[in-house]
Amino acid sequence: MVAETENIIIVRDLVKSFGSFIANDHLTFSVKRGEIFGFLGANGAGKTTTIKILCGLSYPTSGELSVGGFDIYTQREKVKKNIGYMSQRFSLYDDLTVYENIRFYGGIYGLGKKEIDSRAGALMAQLGFETSRNKLIRDIPLGWKQKLAFSVAILHNPKIVFLDEPTGGVDPITRRQFWDMIFEAAHQGITVFVTTHYMDEAEYCDRVSIMVDGRIAAMDTPDNLKLQFGSPSMNEVFLKLARAKAE
Amino acid sequence: MAPPSVEVKNLTKRFGTTLALDDISFHIGKGELFGFIGPDGAGKTTLFRILTTLQLPDIGTCTVEGFDVVKDYKKIRNMSGYMPGKFSLYQDLSVEENLNFFATIFGTTLRENYDLIKDIYQQIEPFKNRKAGQLSGGMKQKLALSCALIHKPEILFLDEPTTGVDAVSRLEFWEMLRRLKASGITILVSTPYMDEAGLCDRVALMQGGRIMSVSTPAKVVADYPLNLLSVKSGDIYHLLGELREYPGIHSVYAFGQSAHVSFKSGDIVPERLADHLTQNDHRLVEVTPIEATIEDCFMELMTDKT
Image 1 (cartoon, chains in turn orange, brown):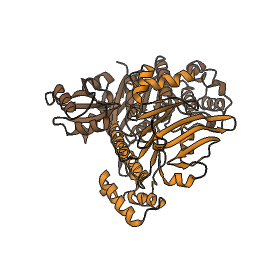
Image 2 (cartoon, helix red, strand yellow):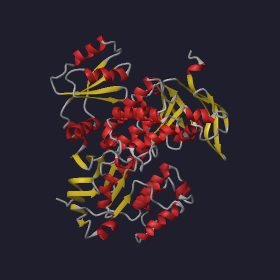
Image 3 (cartoon, helix red, strand yellow):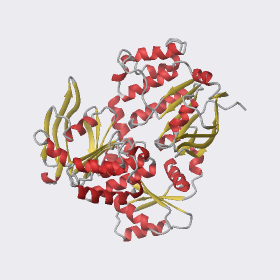
Image 4 (cartoon, chains in turn yellow, red):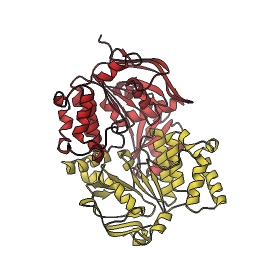
């Protein structure tokens, strides 16, 4: 049995409705510290709604939630300080340079100038960006941008990082380098909560949940899910679940 | 031989210092379902904008159904259907109003060409009074495709119709394309998803403004120049690290729960690799020779060029 304290995200009976529409219909799940948790579902299944609530950006209608050990109703600012977030659409400022973006996010998370400079240096060396320090974000390729956005999202050493479709449109080599970075972060103890439409990436997760119409239709390790649904790949598992409900 | 639907010769397009398209040439036959496969920044959208006469080439010539994209742009516009990557219908018009609008612009009516779009339109017809801005992603995609087809085009340009779309909707979209292809229309489709390449008659693999290969999916795979192994163990993270250190390996890439290991014939003995991994505490080791996928080929072409 996993001790309660090892669960870094605990969700019990989460309901979120918009008028008569129920976006999240009694969700219950937990994520362990250091786990890579894949949060899958078809478009419109309710994933973004859940992520917004977990990040403290939207209130649940009902349910008990704790993120990083903090209550989502009463300790939202503490939740925000202890998480990192990266979205596909917007993560970095196009008209700031690589360094300026790092400094900006470091500042937001309350890091001192010295600390920002030392972390920025280490980060750029690690990514091989030393010569791009003063380049505008709009002038660097998408794959670089996404790697930098991820590094910035974990700059303040959060307990959990939320990644919303981080690899959409990225070339296949950079996509794999991105996952190397995710493995690395998880190895250092950061919990990774990730959504993706690439089903091969679902296989890299320790556990995945698959949402259909606001509910969690399945949740387990990729191996167990494949066994349970008699499918050779996560792609087939996903198709079986999402299609069955749509028909 | 029938003249090609699309012919592109030495096309180059620059934006400032960025070379968006770098001397590309290809042709597409009538009725072909042709895929442009590549990540963001490969030049797919620029190419589509030039072929649909929305942007001018810097260098090179392009014809669509025998017409020049610069001189005969009006003719091309009348015979092309175009679905841009970004949803570009009128958000505050209803589903039906959008369709009627596009039909009227092209001097036709919804009724006249209903048969062509019936298959697709019927799925959203129950929502015909809903504003386009309030549709779900999948429904928007179906409406956009209906609008692109309403004037019975001879050629269809679909720019990343499945980007950001879940696996189920992607599958359904490709089923629609296959039925459309049966009606004889030429279809050009771009996508960043490598697994969609196999659904096309021929594909162009694109990266950084260049076409790395134009061929049938089967030929792309057959031309893969290396040997390939699928390697599995209980822990992919440590497995990847270990494999990268192993002598004689050309590349190591994760593919779901296994790693694909490429090598030149003779550089590696699979049984020895398996023994090595087992001796180094990897559990449940499986080493299996496999055929390359389009994604293996794409990555090999990428590293070959750089």
